Image 1 (cartoon, rainbow, N blue to C red):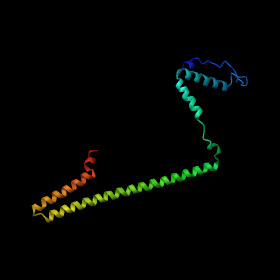
Image 2 (tube, rainbow, N blue to C red):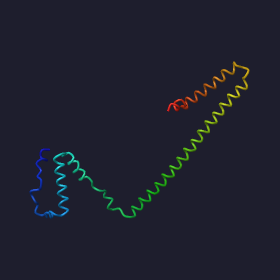
Image 3 (cartoon, rainbow, N blue to C red):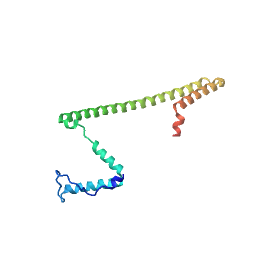
Length: 160
């Protein structure tokens, strides 16, 4: 870290085969800005400079990009369009299945409710005069309905 503090403000040694850009050109101004930014970064946060330099060295493009032609791009676009169409059809089917599942579930609940009500009515009509049969029958039916509702999660749904 101490060696970063000794960086010169401008390069003192010129390589003979390099031509220095004119001081007024936009390119030289951009280079000076980059150099000053690198110097400031090296003085304040040398770890960040190392990360920045490492990212710059490893960001090599995919070699297949140079070999791609318009036919390849057309194939990729066709595959993407087919994929989108398949995803749409899958979503449409899933939504349809969910809808039918909801209808069937509610229809089964309605049928179960009608069966329980009919059973209670039949027991009440048949055993109206016999309380020794009526009380245990209604208690059993109530226990069955309560157990079914508890197993279905009726109590936990009402709390939410």
